Length: 49
Image 1 (tube, one colour):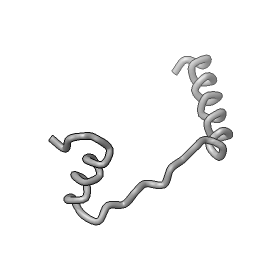
Image 2 (cartoon, helix red, strand yellow):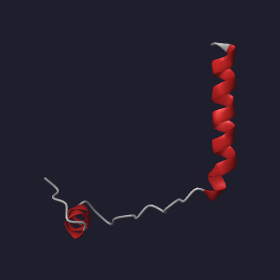
Image 3 (cartoon, helix red, strand yellow):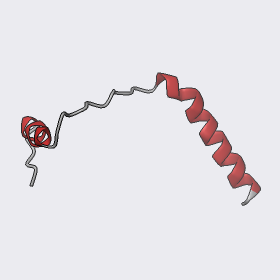
Image 4 (cartoon, one colour):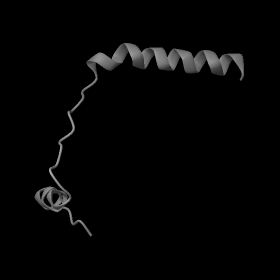
């Protein structure tokens, strides 16, 4: 790999590793079964099909 590209990638990864604690993160919502998916989509105004 090109040395400059490798340096760029390492810098990019390090910047995100440093910023990760302050980035917004939402906990995933666990659904009890597949039937709950249709209700969730309908509640958001989307069609499951």
